[in-house]
Image (cartoon, rainbow, N blue to C red):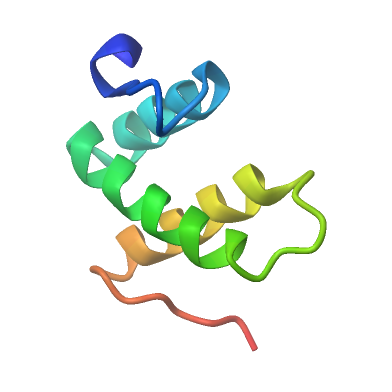
Length: 76
C-alpha cells in the first residue's frame, strides 16, 4: 500500500507511511490524502526557514483540511 502512493520525486518512505496511516484513520483514499498533503507541504515549504518539522506540520494541516471537507480551518 505504501509503495502505491510513493513516487520518487514527491515523498520519502516516512511521509508515505504517514499518509497511508492518515488515509486508514480517516477512511479516505490514499491518493486524496497524498494530494492534500503535497499541497500543504508545498504551501508551508515555500515560506519555511527551518524545514525540520515541515512534514509534521504538513500532515497536521492535511488532517485538518480533510476533516473539514476540503477547506483549511485555522486554529487562530
